[in-house]
Image 1 (cartoon, rainbow, N blue to C red):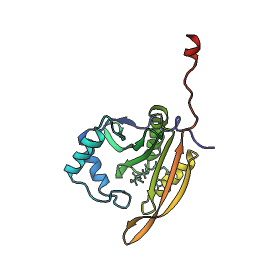
Image 2: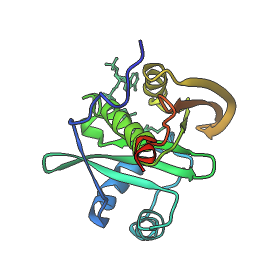
Image 3: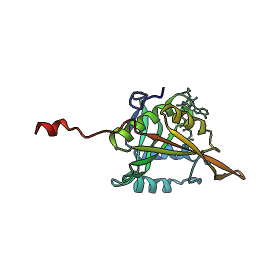
Length: 188
Ligand SMILES: CC(C)(COP(=O)(O)OP(=O)(O)OC[C@H]1O[C@@H](n2cnc3c(N)ncnc32)[C@H](O)[C@@H]1OP(=O)(O)O)[C@@H](O)C(=O)NCCC(=O)NCCS
């Protein structure tokens, strides 16, 4: 039986809005995983600052990212990007601090992000892509199975280290369709 995003991993980490200092920490983690990135180049402090101002701080933007905290430590970062409000879908992204990988934090982050996407942003579909050049591909496959998602493979999407790698595409769908609360209308 699949797990429900609403009941897993909720209290393991606290999600907080990102500060610029957080982004500097994340820049170091990000610049270390070129095999994983769709934009495979290292970012300078200035580039990261631009990204923070233009994307993270954009009130009308299509990105909802948070920092994940355990106590006083920033242990990860991610959320939903490329949100298409008309289509009620968005793309999931998770990055866990290198020293904290393998502790269950990535799985907890996925649970919390799905809850936020489905229960608060009112998205119906959360999708993602992971290149086979990344070690994370098995993690995402596992998450897709866990939440009764769908997967498919798109061949030859990523050039890295003198070869083309395929992508695992995965989709999570909202557990059930919500209907407006009609009780209040009946009482009027
Ligand atoms: C991928 C990533 C988010 C996983 O987070 P994590 O905290 O290390 O993973 P977890 O400890 O929560 O693991 C959850 C499950 O996935 C499995 N898993 C995690 N990484 C795995 C790997 N590289 N290979 C195989 N299985 C893996 C774990 O064994 C665990 O399985 P279990 O529930 O059966 O015990 C993290 O390693 C990371 O940030 N990597 C670099 C960035 C990245 O690649 N992001 C994804 C972009 S596509």
